[in-house]
Length: 221
Image (cartoon, rainbow, N blue to C red; front, side):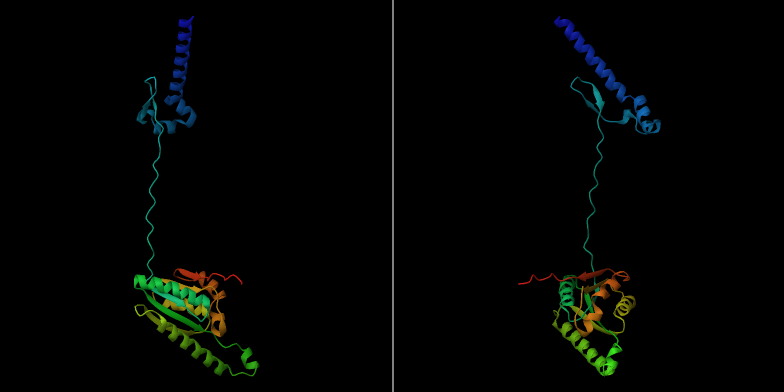
């Protein structure tokens, strides 16, 4: 009885072995995946692994994962900074100065003085006098900011007049800058026209990368 059970177990094992071999046969693979796939990947080229019974079965093919490419730090050597007296612009300048010092870059500080609104004349004010005051204020701020930078930072100042978006884009076209940096919002007679909505207008039309710095909000109290 024990001998009969052993023969039965051996018969079942042979049947299972033939079934597995049939599944691994090229004809079965061709029927399952299509003849072209079976011929393109012949089982004779697949590495084999041994089973506990000494039989060789196809070893699963594991695809290697490619190593990610090294990410290099961008190097901006000529940087245009749209500047005004707002905290947002000064926040941007502090970050850019650190980058310029480390890579020995050159900064150009740009302020754009917009045209005097026509409402000024209707209010009884002198447009020429107001424009002159704003111009002097912007120029003084540019000089003072440039003088406050570290001595090892190369810097020039640029004062332009007109539409801020158009003037910033024109400055980018006229000289080979690598980067434009600006604050997220402005403040004051000059600043409100330079930053804020201007940053959004420049973002979509700039020929160089743009970084808009947004200072963290201070919690009340």
